[in-house]
Length: 228
Image (tube, rainbow, N blue to C red; front, side, top):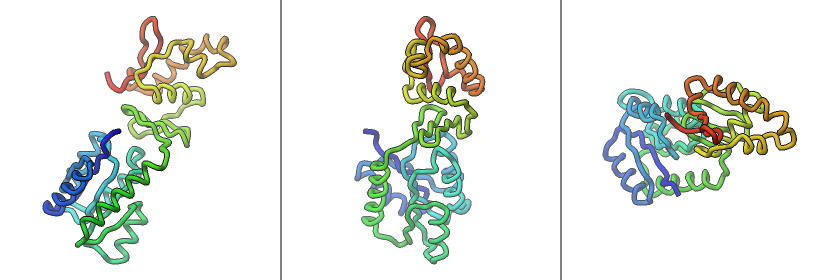
């Protein structure tokens, strides 16, 4: 099982150290960033994050800008966010929760209580079956029947969606022509055997530069890789 990763965005080094130490003792992997610029640099490299602990008062801006970014970015919009802030007025708490935070803790706080809240949020996400499949620059949303490339929605036909979904859910696996015909068009495989290559070409075209990731394996079939 993959170790859960928590991103702490907090400029108070003492608080960040206490939180990271307590969470690491619980078996989580922790990354600490002390400001907006550092936080956005983490997101820019497309790192995997399971939960964000967010301070609102940062030396280079308002932590709510991070929250807005997370909730507007497909890769991160569903990850839990716990705000920890000295701003304890009802208006501040309501605004944070309305913008999409999952919990709001006012400083000073009980370290034990915060760790427990984080654990419960992570357990809740584990219990809820994910409809998102991520591979390389691709995100497949099975619920919405949508595929995103670097966060942008791909305009695909129903058949193109089925083909690309199959590759995303089975990364690096080589699919022969017969495999694809059986899995996508079992009842009409004879007709579609003549147009399969055209579908692959159209999908590559819609992927732009990422079309190189959908490889032809000479004599065997096709596969999707994460990078060249």
